[in-house]
Image (cartoon, rainbow, N blue to C red; front, side, top):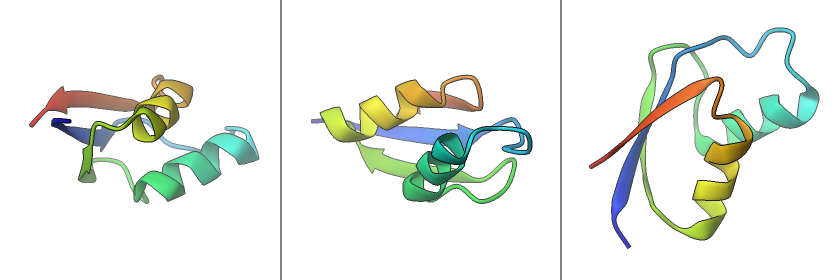
Length: 59
């Protein structure tokens, strides 16, 4: 498995509680913050659910 960098690019204001919790589970708290994760199916699924709020790139 490779690594991916996930960056929050939009606010979670006016998003559902589920999407807010997904961002929190990914370790994202504010716009511009970048976190690095293993590209596991669990992480990729979470990124898929909030793809309109984040950008990703391979690390």
